[in-house]
Amino acid sequence: DAKTTQPPSMDCAEGRAANLPCNHSTISGNEYVYWYRQIHSQGPQYIIHGLKNNETNEMASLIITEDRKSSTLILPHATLRDTAVYYCIVRVNDYGQNFVFGPGTRLSVLP
Amino acid sequence: NAGVMQNPRHLVRRRGQEARLRCSPMKGHSHVYWYRQLPEEGLKFMVYLQKENIIDESGMPKERFSAEFPKEGPSILRIQQVVRGDSAAYFCASSPRAMRYNEQFFGPGTRLTVL
Image (cartoon, rainbow over the protein chains, first blue to last red):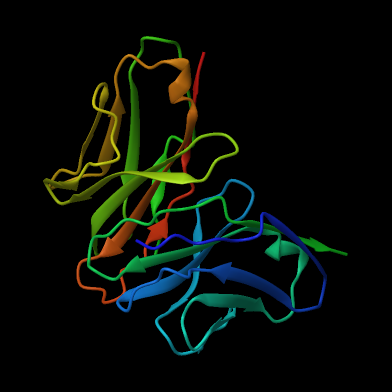
């Protein structure tokens, strides 16, 4: 699976959009971009995933560049409860594949 | 629909004892994954099981660790003769048999402390 690079930490003001970047310059054509988050030592929580089109759900939006070498997770109106470690993971979608979690980005939403 | 359940949530063992961690996947899920998270580190994959079968155990330590997912009952991660370095949070995740995108649902974890 391709390697990802994320900033170790970011701050965001409550109510503002949080934009979390991820670089995956070695991504291959059949690899998806997944985002998970882990709130204070709880189990990781799935957020969103995509292949090449931008995706949106009730939690977030995922913007993938046209060359697929990077992506951005957007939390449109961050709340204090969004403070967590966010993991960007790139992997093939073969059934049964495990996820490889890197160090992620520690997002702090500030009041 | 209840989520992935793990018990116990906290487990304390002395060096040399055995630790048994249990994971009940979500209803309808027949695939289970175990991950370990050491303090201040990311999650590391350990093992992937389907009912009665170990599919991928490439992340399991070669000794003292074993896992099973019997036909009936929860998946069990067993650590024999625990050492202090086994102290960690152990997370279980499950996915359904035929989900196209293989999203994994994680449990709350078991925090193992070895004294």
